[in-house]
Image (cartoon, rainbow, N blue to C red; front, side, top):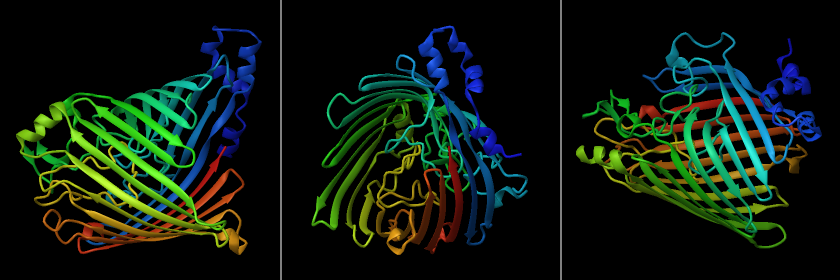
Length: 445
């Protein structure tokens, strides 16, 4: 049975059945026209991950297949309905020893799952749009972030406006999250406070234990809270964006970045970028941390310089980031799926007497991106990079990491995307000595 063909050939009859509850609203030609313009949406994705890890950690080899299937209605007086179902499967190939299974392919218990990931009603009027329900979100800190098969997904009420030329304003209240960056569950939508992934590990609410404790579920302190998100994005001759994320009794986070392109000549384009964000613990979570004589306040700053040659097809970039904080600072790094840092780093474990590994850390990277079309290979790209992650010796001794990565991407038309990624990490700390091979194929429809 060809599952993809079944998904691909979903027709208006199935759409009508799914949208029948709305048919009583209006039975005229415009409503029928919206039904007739209903289209299938989704993708089929297969992925293999091999993680060759240093002892005593076990190697991981994981195969997964799945994707997304759904429908999006046509427009009816500015209204649209979107419904999408996500699924993963191991096809019986998952290792019985869960320590040998990739941590992100399936649920937190490393078992395949499925979820109604999108179920939203959207209304558009001129330059404004409002969406309510389960949806994808793409911002610097709250992000869908397509990393494995099923991405991060959110329950939210999101308003966007583009009345000002080149400006997009976003206001949103995000109640829940599911996905690979969730702390509590991937397959269930849980409150944003529960899904905030911090570096703080505890045996109980009084005892910090980095080696044997569980990562703290902040909702046990703050209650179940959502996130108020607001954003301002300007994009024309340069790009500037500013975002605020406020989660009651958890944290207040502000992000900003700037990208300024400069044409050196008809061939060379330079781009200078700068970024920063500030994280502050607030309310009940702040009071809780202070009773333990620790804090959750820190910043990140970074800069990046890129140079692109159109004739050669080569882009080169140099990037640098650093975190503030101290030995008593815990972090919420990549807390809701957003990884805006110019220099990406693996998840850093707090261990021994440490509360967080990234306080006072410094990161640098050089990256090369080559368009293989210059060699006659259309729609193919090769990326190579080298990064240094310099951790503060007083906070996380003997744990600096060197990272070499290679990425090959190929597209066939608009639908099929192939990706191969290899990353080699070297460190005196066995947790960060490994090499990872990731293969994926995605067919979107």
